[in-house]
Length: 300
Image (spheres, rainbow, N blue to C red):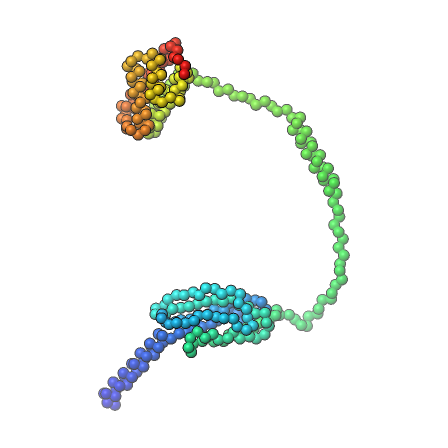
């Protein structure tokens, strides 16, 4: 065997293998299967069609009806990629109402590419022909159930309802006890709320000054009958001129009330000294007004 002959054989085997490999890569394969080969009449089975095709191959993946079988449901074609190939899968739910031995035909998807035929037996449920038949029985008369005396139940229910209504009408309702809460003195209430505010001052400066102004407005309304709850701060300060506070205390009270407005509308962030001075001004003003309660302001 010469060397040149050996190379010729080698190249021949190599190229043949390469051609077979390329052909295998471009080959279209299809497969059909059922989950049951024997069914009762009208029993559904699943026909599964699977195909593997190259990426750019054109295949008509379509199943039409075939004899002796009816389509119940055709699911969507499931497509997935695997390397250079595309995997197609579809499940078709079918049944048959013709008894016998039938063949699901071969499906052609491309040239020289088709599925195998599938045999399916369709029959009736098993029974024993040697078993005796039951005789046809005559109509059996059934005694009607005894009639219930509904009138007795109706009379009883009406009697119970009448007795309940009479009991409700005759029963004497006990008068509800009215609990009268003792009304605190305006000064005692204001002092108590100020003391509580000072001990539990854990909120924001806005909450502190709002509560402080509310305490004074409620006190002056209850003690002097000044409509302080509806007035603006400037109107209230003008109204306070009528209660004859000394100039220094009046100025301190006015500053405390106006500071509360600035803090409330986020125009000023008070310091600890501002909070303490406002608290002292409100408290001292209430104490002074209480001592000079004999002065009667104009009621508005």
